[in-house]
Length: 60
Image (cartoon, rainbow, N blue to C red; front, side):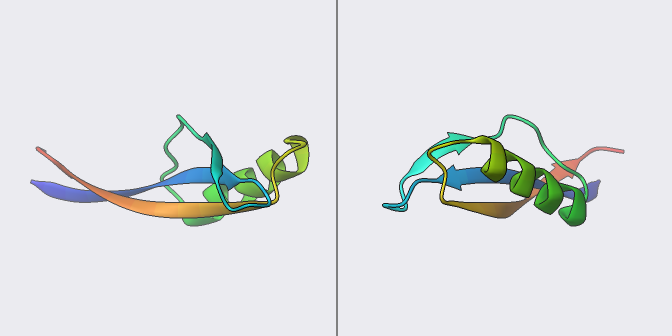
C-alpha cells in the first residue's frame, strides 16, 4: 500500500463562505496554488481561495 497526497481548491466570497469547490485533484501543491490564483482572478464573486491537502491509501 502507498499513501498518496493530493490537493483541492476552494474559493470563498467576502463573507468567507465557500462558493466553489474544484472537482480536479492536483498532485503538486505549486500547481494547485497557481490554479487557485487563476480561478480567483476569473471568478467575479471570489475574494479568497484555499488549497487543502488530502491523503489517500492506494494498493500498489
